[in-house]
Picture 1 (tube, rainbow, N blue to C red):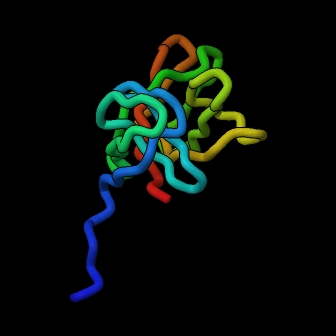
Picture 2 (cartoon, rainbow, N blue to C red):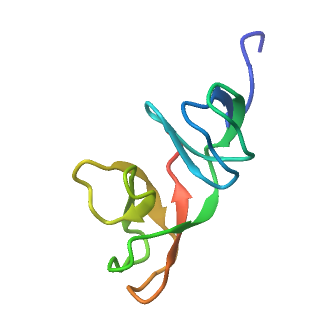
Length: 108
């Protein structure tokens, strides 16, 4: 195919803010995890597919397969859809007593 560019599992995009490796990155409809550190304007690699362990709102208890949203203000995964961005689904239960949730990214 002459028009094929790449698989799309990792995209290189300019950082809208300073990022650290492992941080959730949201650029419009692109949702991914930073593969490295970068300053504002740096070209950063963002992984858009896969399962990642992410920090979550402490009071939230996720069930297997439940939608996971990301709160840009707190920097935490949450069950709350209102004013947040859907990033994927929980691939394991995560009770209120744990600090993280395993999330399969939805891509975009």
